[in-house]
Length: 333
Image (cartoon, rainbow, N blue to C red; front, side, top):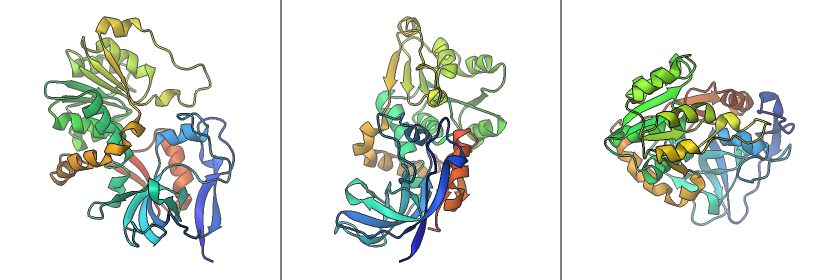
């Protein structure tokens, strides 16, 4: 029986995951059973929530044990089907571990189009894109005249959120770390302004770029940016709480913030859990398709090559060194 390679945990991470926490093992190619699909992976998605999941800190979901398959979405091609609704050659997205060939549950698999790049189904049309769509259009209801700010804006969620807001008529201001990431915001994503939060005067720059203040702020990082953004939020502004990346791996007590500022601003704080919107994925894809075709909505992918590169690629993501959507190319599409 042929062998396939898979990335698993070598040890449970004690802090922010690093490359040495993982190892690559060889397994026999699994046999497909009823209700399953055997899939050849094309791309593996690496996302920040996985770091929390590996430590048992994500939405109450258990951490995988060393040697078990890892969480995260893959896009691939069906090579054997145990479900009559799927045929060999179809392209699907689902979870099967960080492996070259693996099993997906047919009931938890999405069929996706082959007329778009495979990687798009993990980024702008995948969970990051769905997250951005949900926060911008369904929670904050961004429209013409809004001043929209977003942090981690060079990442796939923040970058897509800003582009959606721009397309819907808002002025868009993104926060990112370093000149290269800021250039992506203005030169690729067409944000109206970019602010480098690593600069000592970034708060003053943010205030100037968002004057007279954001009407909507989309939070991905945590209190170090959320509090200055709240202080400048316009009265009756909306805040989407999507992620708190800087707090995920801290062993200190949970992050806390003063509540008075929310009352003073008459602000609406909107918590976003993307799982709530999984049944509406097709709505987002239908909205995004023409924008992609017209070049209004674009993506930046940070791709490493081959299953052996996955541990280092994930460690880069955990350090915030990725430039766009972190992916591992497992095979040629």
